[in-house]
Structures are given as C-alpha cells and as structure tokens.
Image (tube, rainbow, N blue to C red; front, top):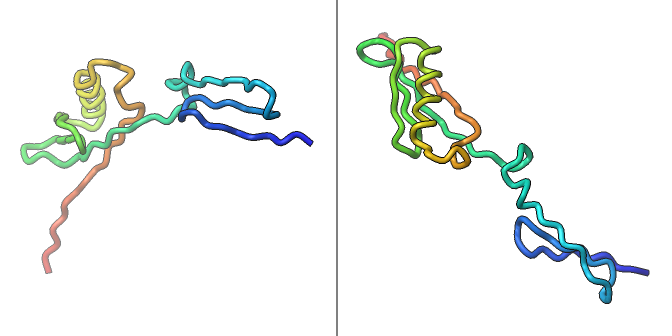
Length: 108
C-alpha cells in the first residue's frame, strides 16, 4: 500500500510524494499569488462630520486624510488619496472601508 505524504517547503509551494522512492512533483503557486483568490488587504477610514460642514476621512494605521462636502465626493476623494499614497498599485489595498462615526450628545 502506498502512503501519501505532503511536505511543505514554503507557503507558496509544496511537493507531493506518493512513494519514498518516487520523485515528487513540485507545484508553485507564486504566479497566482496576486490573483483574485489570494488574500487581499483592506484599509479602513474613520469618517466624521467636519466642524465647518461636510465630512473628514482619516485612514487608520497610515497617514491618509481627506475631506469633502458630500458622501459621493468623499468616496471619490478617498479613492484618489489611496491611489496617490500607494505608488505601486500592487501594494495598494484591494478593499477600502468607510466607517462613519457620529457623536451625539443628549441632554436630560
């Protein structure tokens, strides 16, 4: 009976050995590392109401900040700010998340 064993060389390639005397077949998934099924990063913006009106968005974890008058304009400004911050498009996050924060004060 043949025993199947998996030996992992690194996270992106592995070899399958069917038999101890048989040469393994090498599978390398590096060409697909940037493909859709590879894990994509995301960036989160905290969106607050600006004191002078409109919205202010600041990225958590990196120094990206932008502002706009409307939500539609803010979305366009955030995309533009992320594209300007990351020079290499392969390093840019795949997902941009806007987290709207509203501070309300209630009087008794």
